[in-house]
Length: 362
Ligand SMILES: [Zn+2]
Ligand SMILES: [Zn+2]
Image (tube, rainbow, N blue to C red; front, side, top):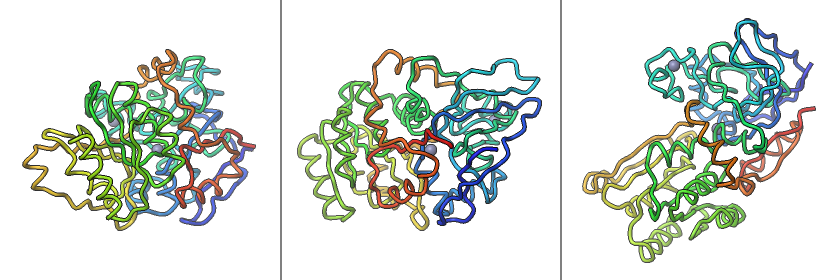
């Protein structure tokens, strides 16, 4: 038997249940979960936000389901046809993994994060808020081996929060030294983004509602931080101040998915600037009102970012191993699976300064 935190009903506490350890089929892999981040998208699904519920249904998932997708674990069993991986390997499952053994056109081009049959743990299959997690045959090819010497919390974070920001700044834009970036939201994904942008030599301006998150943003190298409480006058003042000090900015990276927190910043973008959208949306907040005149006049690029394809993780682990990046400030705290509902409570109040990670499962 194993413990698992299950979403039974939206907005109700997750139920900690005893489940059978999943049986391993011919091509499957069983992980013993070592660390598992609680991502804001887990929280969105828990709330029942429509975009996430729709995705769960599209990918064949239904309640009750074990949540969690930011996973780092050790392989404890492999099916008889699995040859690339062995018992004892430490791996991450990219938050968005292939669901067709990389046979669709996107997977074949190296973009399994947008696979036509995308698998996200905790949505289409049972996730990592559990002692063990089964990786189905159709996704096993995307498991990424993690070299020794990488902290387990960092490895977990790479699967979604860090991986997404890596995609944003190295694949969806090509951030250059001295570029100016505004990062909206300094949670697990935003703080990871700050660490990356800083490592790439860019100047980072961080915006958040939580003072402690902004302290972490400073620790990670932000040149400027601004706190607001969501009021539009406050946001306009921040925009004015940035404009006075920096003129225009090259990139705006949103990790919040909250239109009112993002749109006021658009006039800061320079000609050919980029707006990167990685945050997920709450119910009723799916539509961003866009200043289209500005987008046209400045030829602004609007680019979505969805996690990171499995093929791109090696560079991340190399960077971590070489000590070129420090993700400790991105971690808010580590908890036991029994505390998962307290974690959701803190996230609902935006009190967590960075990622909460589960690393005790019994
Ligand atoms: Zn995530
Ligand atoms: Zn595919």
